[in-house]
Length: 131
Image 1: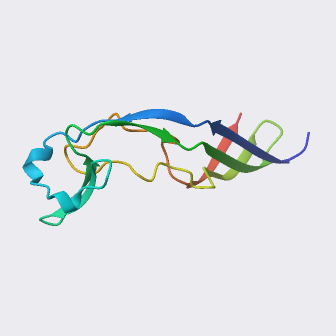
Image 2 (image 1 turned 180 degrees about the horizontal axis):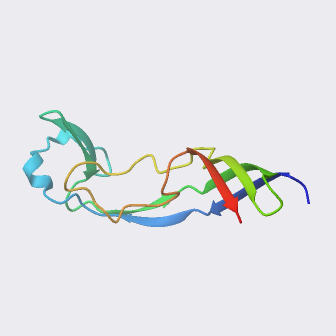
Image 3 (image 1 turned 60 degrees about the vertical axis):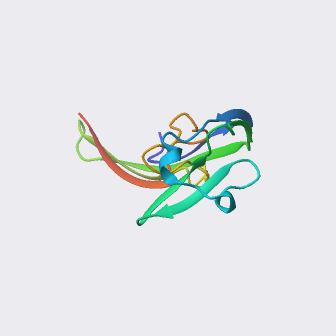
C-alpha cells in the first residue's frame, strides 16, 4: 500500500426552480417604490442593519443556476510502531467556493429560499491514529 494518497471528489447540483417568498414583516421596513426592483426585490439598510428579500405580494419562481462543489484531500500514513499507524490529512472542501449569493438577510428573511452548497470554502487538517 502507498503511504501517500490524493482524493478529488465533487457534487453537481443542477439548475432548479426555487420559490422566493415574501419577507416576513416587510411592512415594518416602510419600503419606498425606488427601493424595489421590477420583481419586488429589495436590499436596504435601516439603522445599520441590512435587509434583503422579496416584497409582500411579489413572490416568484427563481431558476437557480447549477453548482459544482469540488473537494480535494491529500493524506500521508506513517507507521509509528508495528501496531500503531498515524495518518495526516489536509484538504479543501468546496474549493471553488460555490454558494448561493442572493440569500435573504435580516430577521424576517424567507428561510425557505435556500439552494446550492450549504457551506463556503473551508480548509481542514486532521490526524488519525489506528491501533
